[in-house]
Length: 331
View 1: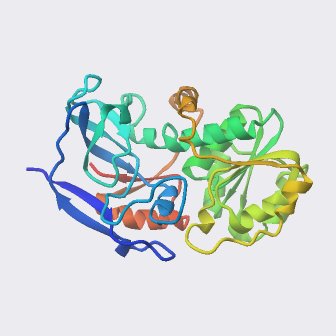
View 2 (view 1 turned 45 degrees about the horizontal axis):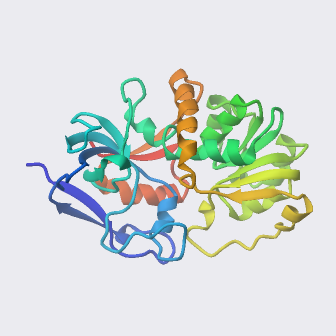
View 3 (view 1 turned 90 degrees about the vertical axis):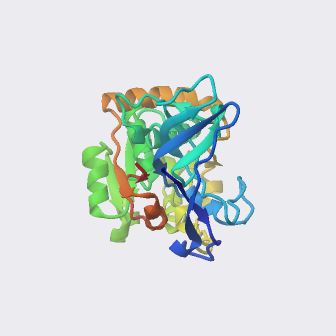
């Protein structure tokens, strides 16, 4: 008889996440209650926000408790349904966490078509990362045709969609990524106008060349020194969608030197969480699904195999080791 496995939070990291902060446990398969669905997870999504949920510092969401299953988006197949909208065999996405089997209320699951689009894509360009890109770019940055959009972590799950959407909507797209391979991918495969390798140590000069008239829209995922440098190139009345600060999740905050630019250039900067307004998900997914199905939006995945590989894969993600969307294959 198949057993469930889960990874729980064993301790809170003091700085960098370590594999010892997690514990793999064997357990029984949970039972679906009234209006609930039992799902066999096939894919687990790993995302930078998970670092914040491992901390007990005040944030926008409750932290994972010690001994609880690590939070995470999942895609899988219905095994048993006590809900009228689902039957065994349905492919669904939800947030069942780091485990092989999970139970959720029917309202917490979304049925997806995995026939023409791979199931894993519903955790990437057609999941939370894709909707995050759509909302931050179109609702907050709102680029006009011909404007320059700069996106950090441009080869990642969110940034790669941001740049491609910017191009689709008539803007210029300039990416910031770590290493020549990622930059080549961003330009040659995703169609960005330019990509700057921040690891080469020439960010300011290459940014001046890629965006000589300045930055109209910045989609910020990284924070720290890179964000501070980008502030010096923002145009008057430009917009910043502050999505993430991954460079600061494992250490002390970076002392910003150029925050004065926000005042001088009357920059509108807004932090956002993609779950703040769920009414934006349907139009976002409608557009994104069309672009992914047609091949207009391309994506790449970094895949770790087996639930036990999740802690090391998350640590790699937080250090920039992923190339595209980081997933764990559970099937």
